[in-house]
Length: 207
Image: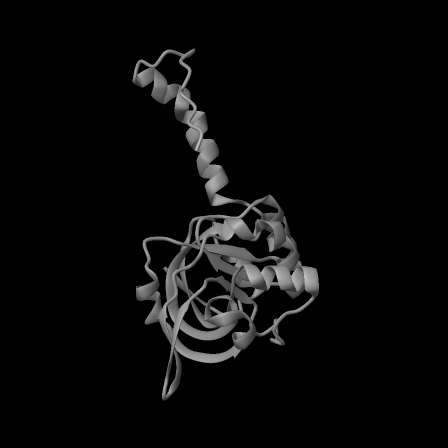
């Protein structure tokens, strides 16, 4: 398993294979819904050097202030698919080369990552409590009073942060989409093995 240095170079991004396990070390920034909405709809965003800090961690962390400064109590990645509406615009606006979150994102974000030669990394088998120990320093915070500790933007320095796996690569491929397509292609064979009739109609469940 490779440890990738942030900010991720274009060459490193292009070398990452779909499904590959990695950890990351360096500086990243955090954000959730309010970051996306404000950045795109209101053109309001933290004054970060996005060339030096171009890894966006989708998280609403639990933070605690001590005499020494801020510390992370927990930083469980949040589901990234709910940011798809703004995801591609945010990637293009800040030329982000690394996104970190949970589950997957949609085709527009994949297209934007392909344009900037970036990747999306997804959690696997992790808890926010485990990740907290890999945050070596909290460097800064933006919009704390305005947005609160969960929605504001934190700057973390991380070391061997993860592991995560490459859920979207720099060529626009999506691990979850390809896995779903492979599963669907195998369904007729599996149904035949289980003696399920070809014309069998599955019950639809409406949530």
